[in-house]
Image (cartoon, rainbow, N blue to C red; front, side, top):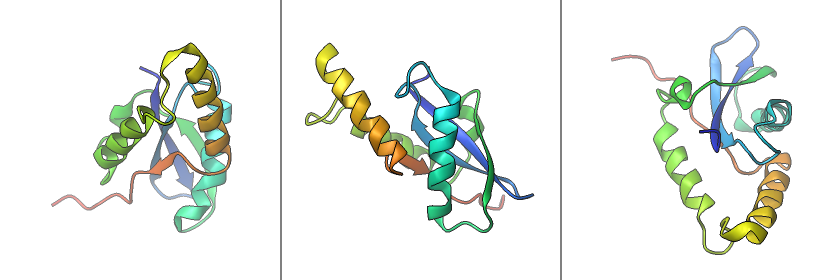
Length: 120
């Protein structure tokens, strides 16, 4: 499944922070375009340091332990089937993809999954 992908972003020497994005918006999971979009967005999350690298994760499982993973996944899937812009039919799907790609390049439709929490 490549429709939703997780992206790990490193801030200096710290632990990775995770983001959730649409995967097939720029074509068949074009990792460079996804990583670049998330790197542009990451500084707006108020995290310490500057983002140094972004890497598309092999699976969503890598980010599933983050505090807001399920909330963001739910919001993302709800957004994907919105009747006003959802990908219904070939013609509308193309328009939807272009809109999401534009949104991601402008820093929207990227979900920050939250700071890691300490184990209890």
